[in-house]
Amino acid sequence: MSKPLYVVAVDGSEWGERAAARAISLAKKTDAKVKFITVMDWSTLQPMMIDSAPSPLLDKETEEKNTIKRVLTPLLEKYHEMDIASDLLWGDPVVVILEQLKLSHASMLFVGRKGRSRFVDILLGSVANKLAHRAGVPIVLVP
Image (tube, rainbow, N blue to C red):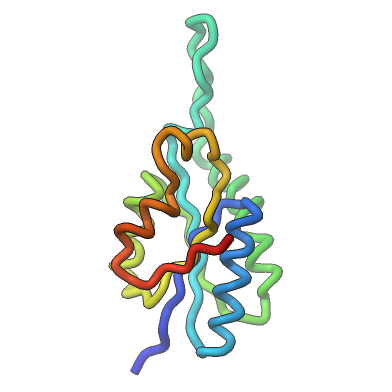
């Protein structure tokens, strides 16, 4: 029988860090594997246009490197004693995370109750809330 896999959605927020800590703690007790994923939504990275002036396009490769350095690397260094997989993916965070749960046959999802995009969350509903209703696996919403 294979080890359970805990997927942790991280975004660089303190809530994402708490979700990672909770997953690591449980993984040590249950001998589970852990995978950190962060999802970048290209549409949220583009600056808004001001005074009808076109905004400069952000460099995708640079944004990936910056996000890995800011979000994934600190967590991987913090929990270096464990063999943790990680991935940076592009798309709608809810859709991508749900796809990853299915593809990886995850046993559980850990996600912070709040994330980095509070304004968008107020307008559209939080990623955590949407995942809680659609995950298909046990989900731990970490306060």
